[in-house]
Length: 398
Image (cartoon, rainbow, N blue to C red; front, side, top):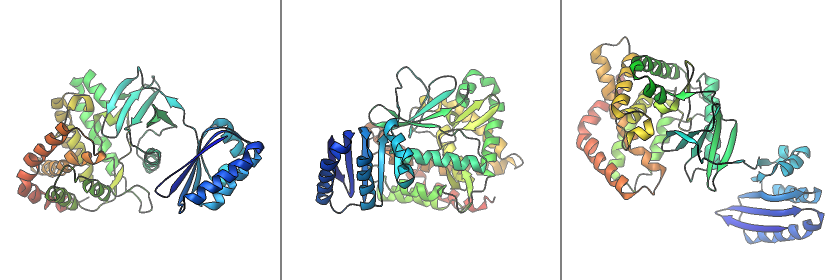
């Protein structure tokens, strides 16, 4: 029986390897108690059971001892055999026990979508796999599942993952069942003559989404407040004045509690026959539709970077799709009113064009320089114009 004890901040990790049976329990208890005494203070204890082959009743008593020592205690990566023992003995009801995740490889899989959070692959005709970028925590992955479930209950047509997996050594993935589904981008590429029909569908999906009122007791976060936190992490890329300018634009968005996807671009809409289904739910929030449409505009029209690999269609086709979608979304308004709404949406899109940099502090210098130049060109040099448009946001009533 091997035991490795380490500490990061105030979280102690106890990695167990081998068989935790009666013969090993006495020495294991002494080793663990000594290690814990050396690592005070302790806020959380995590028992890593990835290499634990067997656990007896004596081993269960050690877990119970750890759970009593620290209220924040969990067992991670328990194999099927170990998990069954813990479940049968009622330990899964007394403490958090996480099963070991199955391992998947992306070798040979078709890539069907790519964004700042991760890459989506097709496994087969019935399932797809979303692989999160390195550095994404398991809690972040679980949060996406929670957001998808909440949005589904509120009435949003979305896929819900049935499995969390590991991909390689350092990444997590979510597996979704989508029977013979294709992205909206794929269908547009195959049938560009149906662009108007797809634009109507796109607009209808936005309207259905924005008709949903998020209840006050929901765990779906305020989209503006979350984005403000991201913008404040841009110190490496923008100076204080630049960050303040983006915050000013966000601050003018009216308060509301409608359901927002916050990245509803053509590759995040899957079509099962004639039925659309929204995927990539990691950024779901509540707020004003202006923010959702602005962030969609950022992806489909003012996208910064190599457009086609991310969106899946040529830039001009994506531009035309979005503009027609907006015309249908605002159907019933005058041409002048629709033009004004599009100006407001474009102003908000400038936030999203740069807030995605908060995902990492290690983007290549070439990418950083390009973004900084575009920020000066499209935001700093147009500051007065943008802020004048922002002052009109309150005329967008729901």
